[in-house]
Length: 240
Image 1: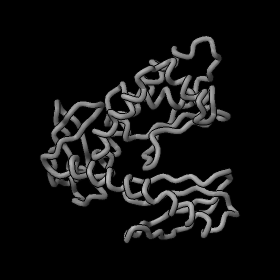
Image 2: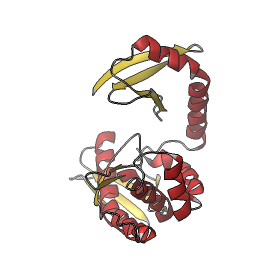
Image 3: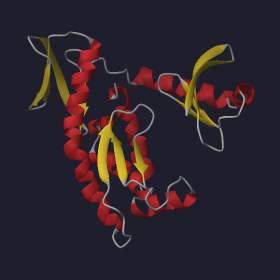
Image 4: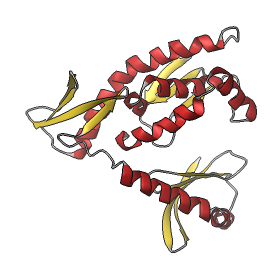
C-alpha cells in the first residue's frame, strides 16, 4: 500500500488529495471534514484516469464541501478553551482550564478540570483524548454487552475490543482476527449512538462487506439505525 499527495482543481477550487493505492477493485472517494479528498484506488490505475473520475464527481464534491462549511458555521469546532462546553457520553460538561505545575485532566460533577504546564493546543488535545480513552474503556465494553444478545444462536465470536482516535471512520472490524476497534471520539456520544456503531461492526462478522444483506442484518436488529447515525452530526464539532 502506497500513499500519494496530489491536488485536484474544479470550479475554480483546488482540493488536496490523499491517494492510497491498495488491493481494491474500484476507485473509492471519501470527502474528509478537513476538506481533503481521500481516494483509494488499484495500484495500476493512472492518475489521469482518477482525475477523470473526480471530474465526474465534481458536483458531489462541491456539495459535500458546502454542507461541511454549513455545519461548521452552525456548530463551530471545539477549541478546548476555558469555558467551552464538552460532551461526555452525550452529557454536557463545562471545561475549566487553568495554568499549573503539571498537565492533567479530571472530571468533577458537571465540570472537566484541565491543568496545563504546557499551554498548547497539542497538549490540550492530548489530555482531552486521554479523558475520552478512559471513558471509552467503560462505555465500549458496556455497549458490546448490550449488542451481543442480538446475535444469539449465530455463534458470533467474542471479539477483542480495541479503541483509537480515528479521523475517517467510526469503527472497524477484522472478522478473521476477531477484532473490533471503536473510534475513541464515540465516548463523546450517548450510548444509543455507540450501540449503533457497535452493532455495525458486529454485523461484519455476518457480512464482511456493505451489501444489501449487511444492511438487512442491521435493520432487523436496530430498525432506527439511520436515525442514530444522523444524530452523530451534533457531536462532530467535538471530535478534535
